[in-house]
Amino acid sequence: MTKEQLQQFFVSQGDKSFRGTQVYEWLWGKGAHSFEDMTNISKDTRQMLNDNFVINHIRVDQMQRSSDGTIKNAVKLHDDLTVESVLIPTKTRTTACVSSQVGCSLDCKFCATAKLKRMRNLNPDEIYDQVVAIDNESRLYFDKPLSNIVFMGMGEPLMNYNNVLKAIEMITSPEGLGMSPKRITVSTSGVPKMIKKMADEEVKFKLAVSLHSAIDEVRTSIMPFNATFPLKDLRESLEYWYAMTGSRITYEYVVWKGINDSKNDVDALVRFCKYVPCKVNLIEYNPIGDDHFMQAPEETTNLYVRELERNHITCTVRRSRGKDIDAACGQLANKSKEVTV
Image (cartoon, rainbow, N blue to C red; front, side, top):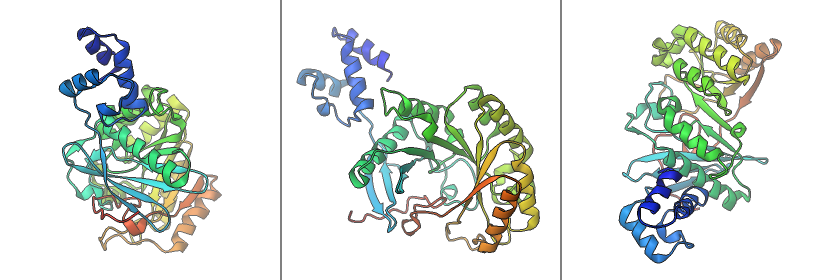
């Protein structure tokens, strides 16, 4: 419910509208999971709230910690479905990787989440609560607040567009977590229509695209939805994004042996990168039990780096975190096992 709806409810009960504001602050600013937590509200009013409403909060059902410090949460939802979220610590910051769907709408063959059917979209509060839980863990285990958020968990964020944007609105609101949108990155496999919609709405967060090939035939073979949203359409939407926002794009790119490891693949990526200001994250592949996908040799990654840098395209080689607990990119698929923390 919006703050205004809560205020109207209290007025309809013969109470003051500011009671609605108090409840709203408890829900969003303080992350209350129970009406009993709302200690500045009378017991009678709390009972009245219990009689009329329910707080469908998430619950961290299981938590695993990697040898590198990464934390993975199995998050139980109010209807007993489960998603996973990850806290990734470094010396300078902590990053939350959050989910937007139970399962996924798309069919990327190299991703464990894509092997799950999409059961439903997450609501804005369920997305928001993942961030609150990870922020609490960041403070508890690393003695610092959460600094960054990436929508790179389970699901395709742009297939749950309205709820993702509502969640970000609350995450960045002073009434919520008050985080800067510049510290939030939404990662998409590439839905051109929705990328343009985001640009039209002048969003302030960053955009990342899970690219993996700049050759249509290759990309369609590993990301079949590319047949519906080909690179030409994706490129046009990214050019529109940059024209409207002035924000450069990050391309996420895994290099696989025998799939996108030729000089032709490298040259195609370089050409694609020249359309819009961008940077490239070359990502280490994380196995999901499919022998078709194997990490390319390091010399192939080095070839990508050399050619990108030679063409003045910023690139980084990103080593995965949390691989030993299946918390790395592409591995989230509800295989959590409870461990002692």
